[in-house]
Length: 102
Image (cartoon, rainbow, N blue to C red; front, side):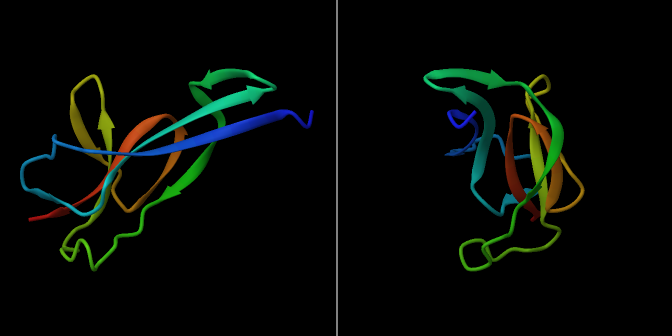
C-alpha cells in the first residue's frame, strides 16, 4: 500500500545520568519506531529484523576519544550499558549516547 510507512524517530535529549569514570562524547538520542497507515499510527515495540546503529564521534565538539563506546540506557536499572564498540544492532526503542573514559 502506498499510504503505509515505517517511521524512525531520532530525538536529541539531555542526559544527566552519566556513569562515573566516563565523559560525554556525543549528545544522547531517543530512538523509536512506529507504523503509519493513512492517519493511523501504531507504536512498534520490536522490529522483525535488527538494524545497524553506528555513532561517529564529532572530534571537534568532543575531543576526548579515549575508549569511546556506544552506550544504551537500561530502564529497569537506570544505568547505561556499553555495547562494546561505537555500533550495535538495534531491534527496539531506546536511548543511546557515546561515552569516553575520563
